[in-house]
Image (cartoon, rainbow, N blue to C red; front, side):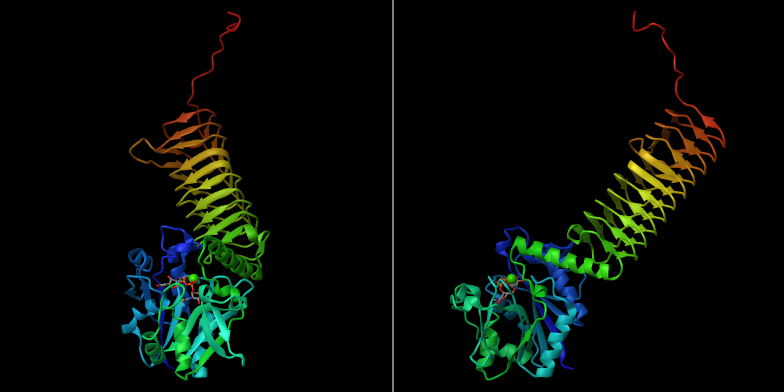
Length: 452
Ligand code: UD1
Ligand code: CA
């Protein structure tokens, strides 16, 4: 097998985005598009990868920090051909050089593998991936001769009205024989509508040298959407989201409205779970089987067991067990371990706490920095008072405790097993096992007060 190297072009400004941020740093489903392109190349087995940076070079290089790539700077963005010229030292005569544009984040690695294999099998000097699209506006067109063979690529801005009718476009993905690319690069001219050195012109030069240009027609044009505008960014986001939702549905997850369900690519969901509309599942979230999630949930880095129901809830970096009900309007903040058969009801916030099995926290309650046992009943309006302005303190509540409504538990404090707290109490001392703590003033009635 020939040696394979890749160059990813990411120096352009992307002026059509109307952004202060370099185009390739815009995110598609939470990941900068340049990182997606790089990871796709890596998945296709490439290990020697160069990235051309220029516009906001430092930020682009930072976004790829820790990746095994070499950077070349293109200080002035004089076109895609000029960008590749910056990596001249990286080119090798006897290697196949894959070129990818940093603004095509939907490409799949198996397509790149197919391109590399075709290039090698065909013995051509270059293989370019083309796609048939309904609206080719903005793309370079593949111009073919009478025999249907590749003649050249014409950019949209340079194309005649007739050429603009061509719906076969250049995807911007090529595999060059290193030697052929080296020979063509220096001869690219910039006498065109944009005054740029176009990489696609290398193909016509290679053809004129009497060498073969091979066109690989893509099966799915959607994979090669080049992002030039915000609306294309939204299209890409939707396409990727659709791909993920489709995979999950194929694996046995019910997604009631895929158009309004946003699931990250690392999220795992068990069979027969139902995802209701307007739900966002992010990061490394794992959800078990037979759950019902949504409507309107945002779960980030959550681990959820089986048969659990969560609705109208924001939850992050925590665990929830089996057959537990959360929401509506619950807020689970980082570092919670919420067990099985639990209810975390409306307007309940839980933070940095362990909640034992069978406990009910049904309404209007704050549980922070607490170790909560099993089968506890939190009355409406319970507050763990965990912060004195300087330090946070823990509250410990042992099994089978009953807390009346509107109680304040001033930490550090322990409610021992089986104890009761009277409604309206402010608890500042530990409560012994099975005791009832009453910490409120007695009611006195002033007879006839209103008439006086
Ligand atoms: C390019 C192709 C076009 C193709 C389309 C596919 C050229 C001249 N045209 O057009 O045939 O149909 O992609 O999406 O190649 N870049 C640099 N340095 C530069 C200019 C661009 O690194 O000087 C990078 C950009 O950051 C971007 C990529 O190259 O990642 C493509 O540049 P862009 O300006 O978007 O090219 P298009 O006009 O879309
Ligand atoms: Ca583009």
